[in-house]
Amino acid sequence: MTTQPATAPLRDDEPPVNLWRDAWARLSRNRLAVLSLAIIGLLAFVAVFGPWLTPFDFLSQNLDARNLSPNWVHLFGTDELGRDVFSRVVYGTRTAFVVAIVVTGIAATLGVILGALAGYLGGPFDRFVMWFTDTTMSVPQLLLVVVINASLKPPLVNFMEAQYEATKNGFFRNAIIIDFVLVFGSMALILWPPYARLIRAQVLSIRSRPYVTAARALGLTTPIIIARYIIPNAIGPLIVAISAGLGNAMVLESAFSFLGVGVNPPIPSWGNMISDGLQVWRNHAHLLAAPAIVLGVATIAFSFLGDGLNDALNPRGRK
Image 1 (cartoon, rainbow, N blue to C red):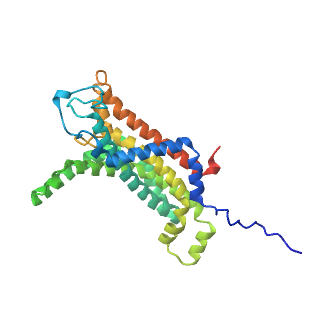
Image 2 (image 1 turned 30 degrees about the horizontal axis):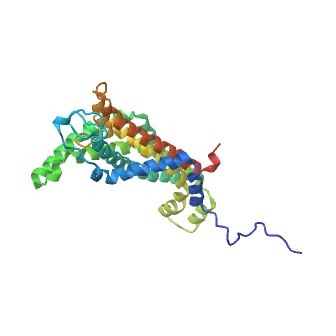
């Protein structure tokens, strides 16, 4: 008498199960997610190559063409200095993407390291990390950014000036560097706690799995176990969080620039363009509408992409 195998073998023409290929198949069936991915790809292309494709330099002024309404020459019109708004919005896309990618990268890296160690080690280190995350999240974001900028900008300016006097290198006279350093640092400081909480929760559910126990029995070190066995199995929720975090970082950068504590002129930012346009929107609405609409489209695209990635990587969570 013969017994049937518990599971039928795969046919030669049947592809093996693959998490990422299956996730991509589910994502490609989500029309909103695909459209959002296309919009984000277009914005990324504009951020990289747009400044070389625009008809005008974003800093060039023409006082004879001030406050023009949108036309075939100036697609988004001109501002009070005769600068082409379309060119400035395009360059603002680069600013938004650079800030979003760098800030999210720093925040996610810091959150993953601290969250993974806290969840895996537990004990006093876990309690300290969770206390630090709770303390950071309890402070209003705007207040924390203002305090960081107000307290650190004068010492940084003095340091850069001292370096310029010592070396006569014009690099140290570039105020834009100080703005970006403060923006990157302050925003990363307020955005890392959610990543730490997410990874900690994933690690707490993974660290008792048989393959982690086997890795410990084999004598592998804690960093190797975390990097090779724990973080790869928690990467799905992290990808979803990073996708949503990119859009959130763009909105925060624009909000801080709008309030004067982010990227400052002459570098175009959607936030400082919205701030300038808000003062004259009754007579020149295009100065407010152009950057605000682009920011809204980018934010919505990242939101829908995050929802699509959540459905694709966690199909059991769908209703």
